[in-house]
Image 1 (tube, helix red, strand yellow):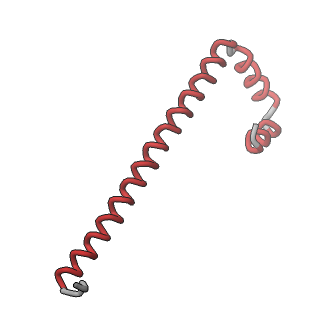
Image 2 (tube, rainbow, N blue to C red):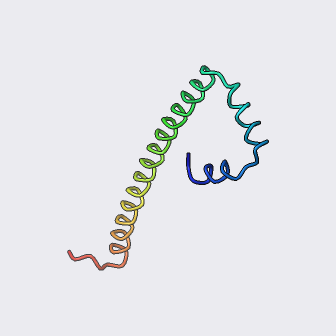
Length: 84
């Protein structure tokens, strides 16, 4: 439990606390297990998507670098600056 949740739970009224505890008591073990599995699946999918975007960004940067180097060479050739 993070500090924000802890602060909220410490400052809630007794009636709200009783209602919250009653609602939490009705949740079954199966539902909690399914929630945990869903969170694990979501986290793994998020990691996969982040890796895909990271590699896509790397490929784009490599393409930009190669294009920049090619364009420098092209401009050198057009201006006649190249030695040779």
